[in-house]
Structures are given as structure tokens and as C-alpha cells.
Image (cartoon, rainbow, N blue to C red; front, side, top):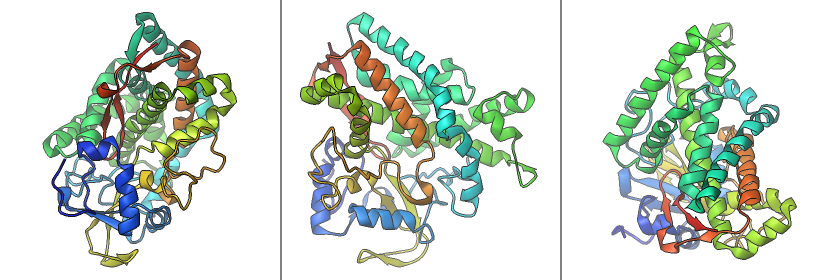
Length: 395
């Protein structure tokens, strides 16, 4: 484990922390209002629910315009690759408002409903292949194959390019501490998107990229840097987060026989199960930057300090969730923050929930009985997005 400077220091990429961060959150919650890290340029991290909500809503003090990476170095905008940042999540008001509206129609409940048949067909094909083999990895062979193809289809991108997207997303998020690798992945992703955008200008269709290149805002076309930023964000934010949530769902069912058999016997519990997965295994932590010297929850912060919106830690706060470190499949009150809070709340939450629901319905219909083949072989990724990377299962 990393030799940290103090009991309230942390490393989001440390193997022990990634494997089980909840004990550290409990320690921080009891011993300090806001944890502090000296790793990767330093960062502050509130872990109490009320503090996380307050920080996330205070967009005037804690800006997204310097990037939303959990690292102080190698943020998306630092390299100049995305001169407009990654709108809407990587910008502040007033730019945030109109760039967010560009995505809302594609992520509405009605639109998401239209994506369900294709998602279901994809899930059936993938789980059918796993069942035919008689074994598989619920993360690698299933969870990690779904969102990248769903998002790709919405953007009008060929399915055969999915593996390239997986490599780029992992380099940008999972291995973000590798500054050179992250910058290379970003450059390749933007170059690819430039080609796709150029194609849509010549051959517009009914996909999201075509919408971005043909829509007007206040009578003007959307600037190219904004289109590229939105396209990159849609891919990066819509892939790793959702495959982590689906993977966590299947990991939980594979390692908790009672919950698995109850969910199969009582499919009406699926919605509450999904919400509890989102709470208990929340994948996403977002970064902000203090724009001025300030004091937050009793901690003095300096202009330029990194501040992490630790939504997973907030979702384990016992002041807001009864038995907060226990997974309760039919939890009645569950006001979790898995999708964030405030103006930057995830615009794709409807899509993510649909993908989770359909993925679980099709898996359980095909493989209702399964378990982790080797607990020691289960691995997790950390940093910006925490989720299982390998979940070998037998059935």
C-alpha cells in the first residue's frame, strides 16, 4: 500500500483503497470533515453526504472549467486537445446551460425507450454466447461490451470500433495517472471524432453527432470544439460509468446467493435492487477546482486546490442511510447521489438505468444461477470510476 503522509491522506488508485474504500470513508467521516491527499498534485475530499451536496451545488466556488478529473494534473483541458473543455460537465454557467440542453432530447425518457429494443437484442446475443460456452467473465464478456456499443449506436459509430473506445476510455479514466498515455488516448479519440463529425457534415443522419452538427443555438451553428467536447464526453462518461454499474450488479448477484435467488423469485424488486447497487457500489467521483481562497467544512482551501465530489462516500453516510454499509435489496428510502447533484447531475441517468435493467433482465432470464468462479480473480479499477474489471463466473 502507498506510504501516505497521514491517517487522513488517501490515494484513489491505491490497490487496497480501490478494493474496499468504505472503511477509509468511515475513518475520514469520524476523524476529519474533509480528507486531504498529497498524491497527484493534492486534493481535498469531503465524505459526508451534506458536505458533498453543498460542495457540488456551489459551482461559483468549485469550478468545473479546469477539468473534472480527480487529478490536479492531466485534466482534459490542460493539453489544449479540447479547447472548449468537455461540455456540459466540464464547463461553468452560462456555457453549461446551453451545452447541456444540446443533449437533453437524446437522453429523455421517450428517447431512451426507443433505444431499448436494440439494447435488449445486444444483451441477448452477448449472454447467449456466454451461456453457449458454459462459462465467462460477467465484466469482460458482458458488462464491458454493452454501454460502448449502445453509446456507439446512438452516435452512429460502427460497432467494430468498440474495442478502440474501450482502450481510450480506460486510458483516460482508469489509468489517468499515466499522463503520457492519457494525453495520447485523448488525442486519438479527438482525431477519430473529427473524422466522424466531418462525415456527418457531408452525410447527416438521425444520430446524436448529426444533431450536434446540424442544430443551431441562437441562430448560429454549434462551434466545432463544443461538438468534439460533447462527443468525447458522451463516450467517456457514458461508457465506463455504466459498465462499472452493470459489472457491480452482476458481481453482487454472483457473490450473494440470497439476493440473487430472491431477485429471480421476485422480479418486481429489480428497480429497488438497481438503486441499491447505484448507492452501495457508486462508481463516480468528480473533480472540481477552488476558484478562490475559501474555507469549507472548517478546512482552509487555496485557489487552485482540487476538490473531489466523493458521491460514493456520501452514499455510505449513516446519517442519511440506515445500515449504510449493508446492501439492502428492498431498501425503501434511497436518495443516493450516484448520478451527482446540482446543475451537473448526470444527464444520462435515464439511459444508464435502462441499460442496467435490460442487462440484468436478459442475464437472469438466461443464467439465473451463477457464482464467482474464483474470488481471488476478481479485480477492481479505481480513480475517477470504481468498478469490477474481472468477474469470472461459473453456472
